[in-house]
Length: 208
Image (cartoon, rainbow, N blue to C red):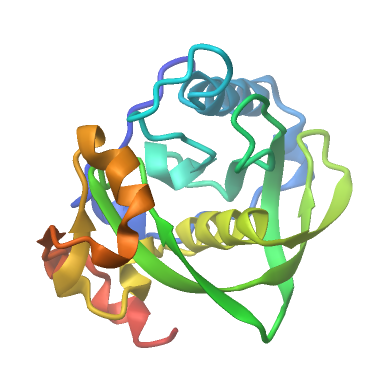
């Protein structure tokens, strides 16, 4: 699997929880090829280093169901916030088992929702357990942006998009790529909005 296609925001698979992955499957050639494809996708769209384009969104995470693979796999760049390097990690069956009571609100975007952003409330610090691509157990204790990223990706694996957590989905931010730098500087005064109510998962959101 060398080519991955990002699902349309209306695709029902985005709201379908991913299937758990067993150790036997992890060790198959086909599964490892899927991992490589996902890694290449994130690396290719990371927009980091000397050739970084200021007004181009940076892809720092990808979950399998975003590209039509119904498995609990996430690729995360824990170098998020650092413009010149990647720290890509493969997380299989990630589970957040501890959330801090302290929360922060930050703007989030998604490759499945181009030019749509929104402010989401997340725990400032979390603890995560998962398997790596070799099937080894790993644990992560992350704070700030990496914690937000991991919560965003685990939401994907549970069939949730960031717009499902917006306080008012009728007023998601509309941000064209050419406006991205301006948006990041003036989020609190941003006046371009779009209604994403039709894309919100009303069934799952009741359980948040």
